[in-house]
Image 1 (cartoon, helix red, strand yellow):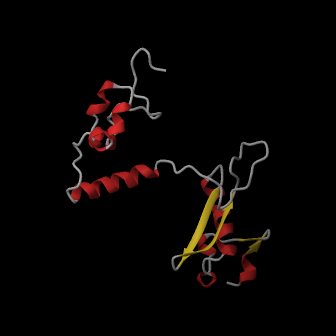
Image 2: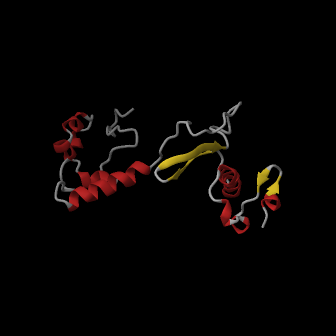
Image 3: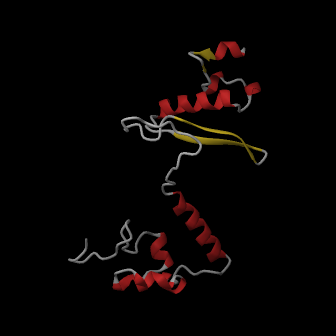
Length: 154
């Protein structure tokens, strides 16, 4: 397959079945592929990306927009601030498991014994919450961090 055969509307048609391996991961391949994937997968916003080769960033960029519902959407770039979603939960659980394996932590430990400031939460049961409660989302702490579920709760 020739490179010229892949040209389509100033973009490279790089569906997996059309991708010649000799092109490698270049910007001319990655950016159109991400645009295609965004459309195929129905990603409403944008995608920020970096391609790393031999431990260094080869190139970075973005496709789509930060907020497609904005009156004037800004394009997504490699410097667009993004929320990391729920990724920290996985890392925290793995790290906790490693600490348990090495004997540095017990999941039955009260969080307040590790972080004394945890007792300052406005709920008298906060001093009873264990690491295991946090890992299994059974602590009673709401997403906003407010544990006051009584009649005076905001």
